Image (cartoon, rainbow, N blue to C red):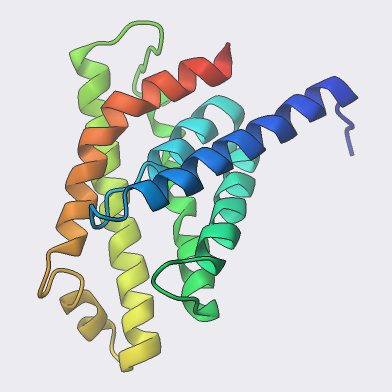
Length: 179
């Protein structure tokens, strides 16, 4: 087991606290915009800059607080499902670097990569969470998937908003954490 010098550890813990507070508070601020959240891009960009372990801890920390103090109510099985599903953004954070992402300079190439990742990772997140929640509450994966976009297109709103937010916010968060 490797130990981090106390100064580096303190910076990582402080970064976790600030990023978690930013994600949680932005979730509450954006409540009037259904399924539009900065949380996903914060976790994604933080994982890109700080590593998978950091991103996973951040995702769990955010969901423990937001999932427990959720304005829509608390449900432990749902909390566990969304906590694990949020790891999609952590895992997808490794893709941009392999595709030539350059955070120092914004380009159409990078924006398209990030928009695509935002769209597809959110689609996977939405399919997974709705399938599990559908099975849990309706006894049917299909019913969970059907209710994802009916009567309100919640899944589509989530996917499109992340396709827009990822290319805008991910480079800014990434650069801030790398500096």
